[in-house]
Length: 505
Image 1 (spheres, helix red, strand yellow):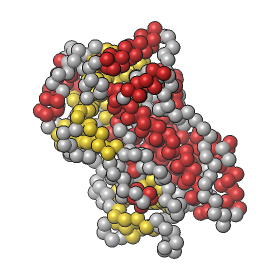
Image 2: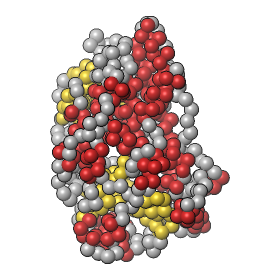
Image 3: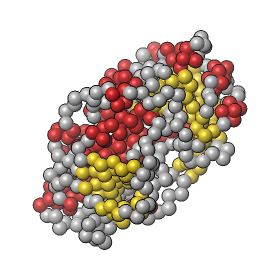
Image 4: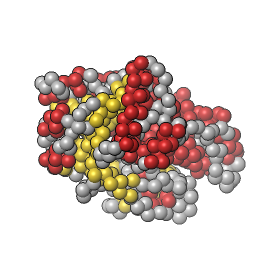
């Protein structure tokens, strides 16, 4: 199902890309690899672009016969936005994205504001890049445009990967994938960006990754903003764009503007009642309205405008022990190795970071003997951050869905205290149940610079000496590069109050 109100707008392809400095300070890998990327989602497209600009030849395989306008809104936080700006997408984002002025938490039945954190220009001031809301299809179109414009990229649609042969010693042509057509394609490196139902994941880990039901499912819907502008009660949600969350027992609703404030995106989390794990399954608008019938009048008005909805079951997965095949020629990224629940709005951002880090690391490769260590450096740099972000997302599921009672009142009181401190210009203690009010967590999550992390590992973390030594002694069997320098975890509890809340949840 193509879930949109307007056709994809021309700005995604027609607004000129900004002229930006070359990636990696103009450095291109001395050894150009033939790389297969499996999956043309956001992470796969980012990896394709980043690897091509590192000097490699990239074949992007996508099972879908066409790339369409699927999904609804998506949040692009500063840790991803700074990459998009460096990739020349600034003018496109300025034409399409919405910059929310705040995140607001409300009580479901009355609409009372219980939490508030100022965003807008504050995001750029505090974290060095803006926070945007965009339509997922527009985001995908932007990254697809980058991938198509990158040198040495071949994109093949309708190319379903049925199996992978990861061992370079089996065939002199190297590792390979086999398509459903029977065609076999060889490469020096295979990147599994094939999503939450990854075919390549089992080949890498040797494990059956059994999904764990979260107990939640979600509806997605989009409302025309012009309908809201006609209603004095709903008009402020468009005129002053914010990310608004209504918290309820076992449920919550997240809403914000997309497509230059022409559409209003709704994500409604509720107890799972038999949904499927899919982005394209149609849901019942009447059932959605019934599930949220106890919400405040403004929400009921919003839902009355919904003509169609998508629904999907939210499944969780335990962190994988490794993302790199033992032979060092197959690697995972994005949802294939760290699927994110939507409660922290970081799934796409972390996948785009993955692609950027992988491209930056492989801009240094000069010998095949360096490939496995560089892939393990990628894993060492990325796995702890992805795992911590997964944990932070799971925590929000519990925080948002507290049933009315003492714990809910304690949550609301803590959020109100942070809101009043924010509005009065006072410091906010770490560990607030509004995780966006926690300056320490926000700094770790949003200040992250993928390229700076690679540069730091290369220059001061021992990476350069290790990788260059392998170029001089290519028969070395050393597989493990130096671990990255320690950094704080975005999900680490920062105060006694949060430790208490975690223990109760």
